[in-house]
Image (cartoon, rainbow, N blue to C red; front, side):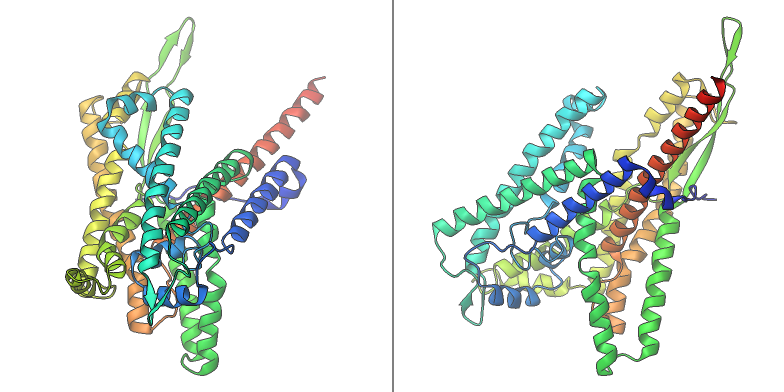
Length: 443
């Protein structure tokens, strides 16, 4: 059975620790800067026509990226590309460490290797941002609603300005994320995505209450939706904290006249090892036809893209089947990349650890792999159900907002990770206080 991680508490002491307080204030300040930038538009855009276009693009990849950027894409602000180029570059570099011996060696070199991989990720971010910005600047000139173009004055100058602005915005966001990670609290990149998603929550709640006010929703329906939101959030928290703990025993060894080791421990395997990567990849792939159809709308010879996007529209049975299959595939694929049972078994053997009843070495690797495969099946089913929930709510209950799926996973995981870091600072402060008291008593 899966077991839960430890509880958190003592958050009321945050104000008593100056360092933790300054880290939290710095993080909030950086997130405020991000939200301000998410409302500064790129020059040369007709905002009203752009808003109409994005209303028509709901359900495409553009709509999903707009959700991650907190509406910055639909307003075409300086942060329109968001932090997604950085995430894509980081994932690509991580995947390449499996096939590239050079990157794999860098990964094993500790802090120096990590800095080099971070440098490659930054270069990759700039390249991806330039590619996306060029494509967006060209595509914007072809966007029109009712014969009116989104771009006020299409020209080479607009393209150059658009590319420079968007790439600079992404690089600045990457810097903000790194500063939050280093000088703030939590993972900066994850918190930026979290802030973008959370920015849309008030509008979602307001839209639901407005439907209740106009009579389209009964008060019971509204209460049911909010109760379902709490229930699903609780289920996601439970699964994200769930672990399969494999018992580990360390053999005793004698050094001089003293015995070391002989301790019992465990190897924690998360039920959802892959995190939010599978739904992000699956959504990107399955919504590509709809996105390309938006760019090529009305262009002769590309009408087949519109037919494919109609078949794969969210809510259609083929969409559900392919979406689920892709999530399951990426759950296993990404888990295999981030966790290597053979390396784990070798490390245990080197440190004198073994699983009771299992021979060290290859047998241990096979056992860990079999356990990981079984819990990944459970994790894949859980992620699939959470990600299919929004489609059911939208199609069956006509919910006016996107609840569940990738956005909910990101919000829960980031919140848990940030609270975990806060708790670590609190425990560290308490430990330092106890050590000072012990030294004073000794004196």
